[in-house]
Image (cartoon, rainbow, N blue to C red; front, side, top):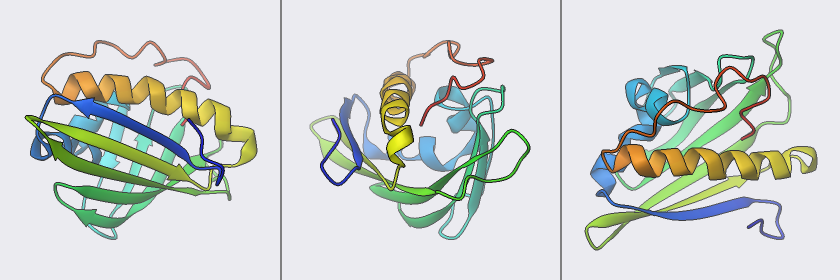
Amino acid sequence: MTEATGAIVREIFIEAPPEDVFPYFTDAKKMVVWKAVSAEIDGRPGGDFRIDVTGAGDVAHGAFLEIESPHRVVFTWVWEAPDGTPDPRGSIVEVTLTPEGDGTRLRLVHSGVSAARQERSAAGWDHYLTRLKLAAAGQDPGPDPWAGIPGGATT
């Protein structure tokens, strides 16, 4: 669902503790399991990341604003144009991981997404969070069906 503020909000339950889920946002090897074909990540406050989501021109980069392992991570999100220049309209992603029974309640809030990208970004988070849910629970999400498709990544 999309809140009135324009933020994209998603909540999912993952059958793994926060300690197992958290590294999927800060570790390049884990990022490529669910959301990218390649990743460079400096997973510390102030650290940068750059991920090639599909291998077809969908490249995003940003910086970690806050890291409270294993419960919260906040980072900027900026799409690069195919020529490598960034989209000047960056946004903020906040992920909160709350223990729930033997698993984790993940809440993602992506704010500052332009109106033109709202629908595609929401669909992108739905797609990739489904993959994260599997990966963090120790299952193989399989090959990303969006890999290799220009514009396949929409977050």
